[in-house]
Image 1 (cartoon, helix red, strand yellow):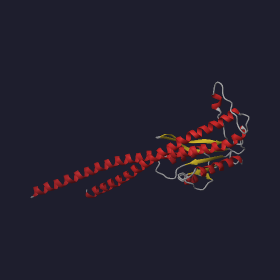
Image 2 (cartoon, one colour; image 1 turned 120 degrees about the vertical axis):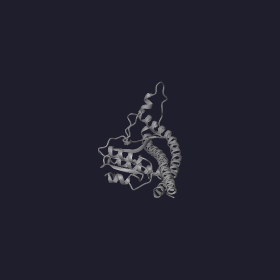
Image 3 (cartoon, rainbow, N blue to C red; image 1 turned 60 degrees about the vertical axis):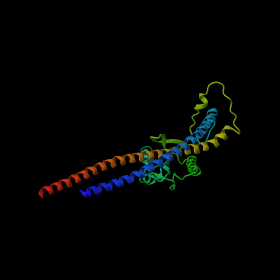
Image 4 (cartoon, helix red, strand yellow; image 1 turned 90 degrees about the vertical axis):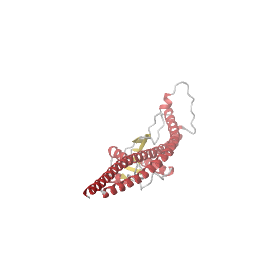
Length: 283
């Protein structure tokens, strides 16, 4: 009985210690989530305006031929995958891995930003082109280099599609893996066509072809950076939810252990009283 009580006390101390850690990590993840979400939302407007500008130029100059829109003979697809560097973020990486297995071909090349899934992707047979790079410390210029690598492979007809795989941030509780095609660049052209009434004529200098050739690489960088911000926001959201769940589970387990400990303690006291009464009766 004494040994059982000691084991229960030890488990209660262990669970309480773990609960302090998970609670602290939940607060840190929540602070990072707020920061990442603000960065994501601030960048979203820039990316939207840049995309709409490119769409407007393409819609008003349908005869433009761009190397970023040309179909390729190759059948391969290059995917830039975003994942985390660390664990303890719930099903975040597992969902990305599951999506990759279900939607990507193992023979197609991939670029991986983040270290958590490199080994799993390699063991699954995927062909990783780049060296390990941490998603927490990557800069915009470094990310731009990987985008340029994808663009180069597309231009050289090594792949026919260049896309990104990231975790879409829907809200603070909902996240979903998603792919977005970068190349070939398909213009929507919807904003200019939906406008009604008199429209001001837009003059392009030097010419729409040159402007579009300069704007599309900027747009590709912007879309990729926006996806990175969104996937980092989703990572912190997943980590906050995972740590909150762990903290709640620790509270439930602690309560259960304390109840069990109190029962054992009461049983021990009852046994001692019974032994004392029995001894008194014998005397």
